[in-house]
Image 1: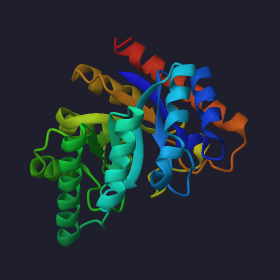
Image 2: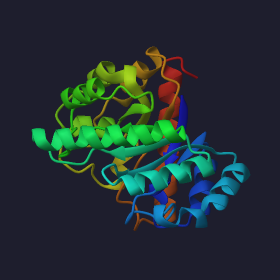
Image 3: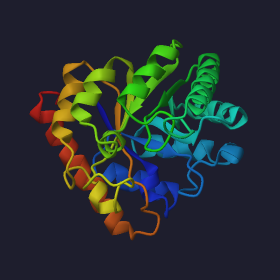
Length: 266
């Protein structure tokens, strides 16, 4: 497995700061945030302005470009621009959200249709499209993820599994990852204290701070033969001082390394 960090953790800072601190913390790679309002690291409608800089920073800091997060799966124009950016920059995976609302069959169908269209674009551009269960969205737990897996047969499709969303949906993430691991092509990881709808304050999203059995979660991934990215995604950190962001990054890197060592993956 490749340990990475979503640059949204450093959303209040420039892209080089995100690369520099991620490399200092010892990560293998980085996921570029294209989340409007949370960072300015990759703005899709002007991605050409930053493409060369991202490639330069990847080389300078020896960080593999593991993925991009662009959450709007229902806007095909935005998704196609994201595909253009991914191909030009050399990013193999685009992580996106399902949209919609929970327990609404019409919204579920819309999500399936949109994700199917995204995957057709992914096939065209040679990019993998990964979708995760998200609290309150149309795909929000293991049963809806399994339904999505049955509905999408595209080779460009993958599940992005985030244990914090599954945990907040009152499921056991270790059991949940076992059920869907055959289609997992990306993992967003973070901890969570309690089962409230939000993931909590940024420091409590660091691996080891919350209630989720992330060691067991990583063990299931390893035993299933998963070798893809595991990217820390911490939201709400835009106003934090840089030192606090660096602590979250380093703390999680250590926990992930120990988790991988505990199950014989490193």
